[in-house]
Amino acid sequence: MQKPDKIFLIGFMGSGKTTTGKKLASRLNWKFIDLDEFIEEDKGMPVAEIFETQGEDWFRTVEAEALRTVAKADNTVISTGGGTPCFYENMEFMLQNGLTVYLRMTPESLARRLARSSAGRPLLKDIDKEELEIYIRTKLAEREPWYSMAEIKTDTAGRNFFHLLSLIKKRLGK
Image 1 (cartoon, rainbow, N blue to C red):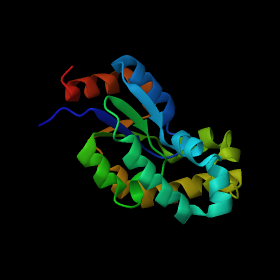
Image 2: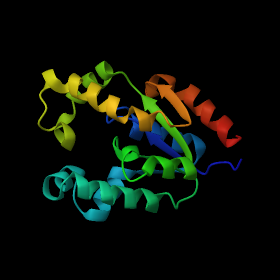
Image 3: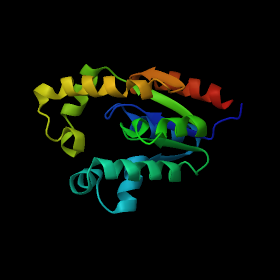
Image 4: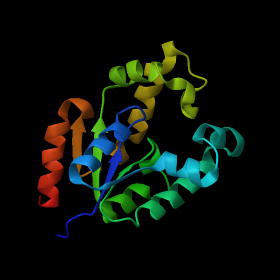
């Protein structure tokens, strides 16, 4: 089997994909791309504004195109959006084009983390803190079939970073 030259980080919003991605890229001496930041730069507006003005369907189309664009880079860690794997056969694409890593967190932990940062997240803007955990639990259940397809699954990214790094290095043959 060919050694992957891309790592796709997947998981629910707030699971630590960007933070973990930057650390992995640094440790592996690879590039790092945050898919949402790439889209924002390409479209000249924040993801929240894209959702507000163009709608989620348009965003998901743009997201799928952006994923295929950034995946052309070699030796790159790519942090995807929480919904990225669930649309336009993106999960299948990532599985065929790199190593997929699912950063799992419990709904309770995600709710605590997201309660502090929900303002900038378009899918959470109309959800109050009392409903947040229920929303997360429901969305996680919907997305789990895609998330669970990842080659590596690890719980609570930050706490197990060095374990995750060793799993990835083993898979990369380093």
